[in-house]
Length: 146
Image 1: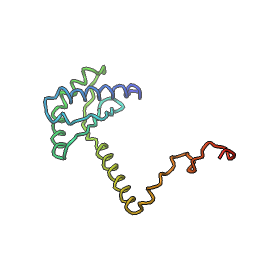
Image 2: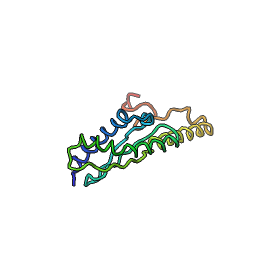
Image 3: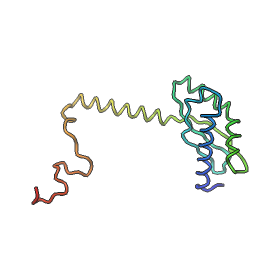
Image 4: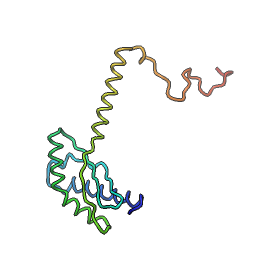
């Protein structure tokens, strides 16, 4: 069982090496659109989950998933060369959709703000005071100075 600090160090090494392998060592054009986002290692260091994201449509994502599965042995050997552990963790590739979810959320917020502006255009003309500021603009002034 590894402590949290050593697990974090191992996760960082795996992420760096896996990202390098995918970007520079796999001779596959589909690898150009893959980003290794983060890695999680089990407490006994036997399994590593490598999270990745892909630019492209569903067909591209499927092709990349197959490519990564085919490259698992190679990537695992390369990771084994930089890890100083008795055993090399088994690799599981997991698609990370947080970037897509973030983009969808930002788009939803922008659409909601636009609908809000269309419903009540005057509400957006006044600039609301930032948090903690006095809307009168007299923050920090004594009553006698105003």
